[in-house]
Amino acid sequence: MDQQKSDEDIIVEERRRFRAWKGVTTAAALVLVAACTFGVLSIRWALPEQFSVATGLPPDLVLYIPLILVFAILIALVLFKLRFAPSRDSLRPSVQRKMVNDYVRRQRQSLIGLMLLVVVLALNRGAFRPGIADGFSGRSILFLFSLLLASLTIVFGPGFLNARFRAANEDELSRVQRLRATQIGYVCAMVALGGCYVVNGLAPDMLAETFPLALAACFVFPAAYLLWADLRSGGPQDG
Amino acid sequence: MAERRLGNRLKEIRAARGLTQTDLAALAGVSRKTINTVENSVFIPSTLLALALAKTLNARVEELFFIIGEEEH
Image (cartoon, rainbow over the protein chains, first blue to last red):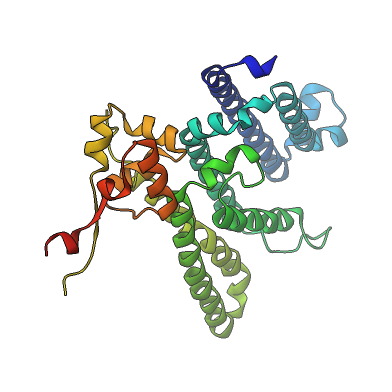
């Protein structure tokens, strides 16, 4: 059936799916921020007790509200993705060729999202400090995985695991820009590690604070270069 | 010895064929930004892309690209 669909029909369908997916991820991010804010307020102002009194829910259950919200978001995202799975025909080379620009745009958005995540986690003062109860905190693990994902993104391009991004990642200009970004990242890594070495010698107490920032800088600078290079290469639309 | 640079007539030939940058990008399977940077001599395309662009525009590679340093002699 799908074989009879024209490239244009598939592209329209894909673009509609992109818009829906963008709306859902934005909503999910907002709920996530709300959940995190609730978590922070819970600790600072004993919100669970107040919330428990107001709603009549057991205090123990109220403590888990942020976690429950996060799981609900994840389940909703997975269900949404399954429900609106892209057509296999969108992998057709002729469609891929015509959709390069759409995927390049999506790559830019995901790169900005990843930059924000890494910066927020690095600025979080507890990112590398072991939790009191759990030794190595969940935030540290999240930070490490984010850095791993970030470095893979710089080297292979955003969405490197998704076959639909292949044409965008293999775009010649993108490859060259990523290569330059990787070079910048290598220099940043050397400078950042050197800086940490100096801090360790001069003020060892500050190393726990500076090390996450140094790690984040190794991604943020190349990513910022990629965004800048992408912006610069745009030029005016030529008719 | 004058420094060699790659010049191109991509914009003229593309315009003569009635194509926009977006159209040519879709036909060649690259992003519009790639076409834009090649046209503005910001980015030097690979042989593969140069051949693909020539084939898409139904032109010879030499018509599309030339070395500026050599043309002056």
